[in-house]
Amino acid sequence: MQDLNVKQLVLVINAIAEEKNLPEEMVMDVMQQAIAAAWRRENSGRDQDVLAELKELRRVKKAYEQLKLEHDLLKKAIAFTSQRNATSSPSSRSKKATR
Image 1 (cartoon, rainbow, N blue to C red):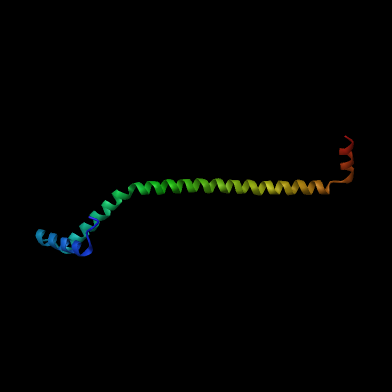
Image 2 (image 1 turned 90 degrees about the vertical axis):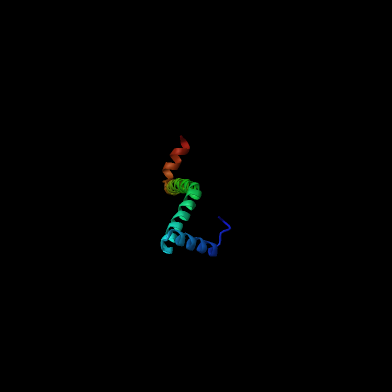
């Protein structure tokens, strides 16, 4: 069927319509539905692959967002700790040294 071109398809539709005494539009609609159904059957596995890829992509995105949040929290904790150590009083530093 891959070698069937548009001219041949029109000839087939005309022949079927004439043989069955049906309007060409009706035969064309039925042919379109049959071709679409065949395409869906042949490509249904691809849909499953795409759905699996999308599911994995959502999982990775969620994990990335979680890691980004953790990274931001760690940066804030480091900045807070660094600032706290830099502003601590000299007396508290001398007490730590004598302990």
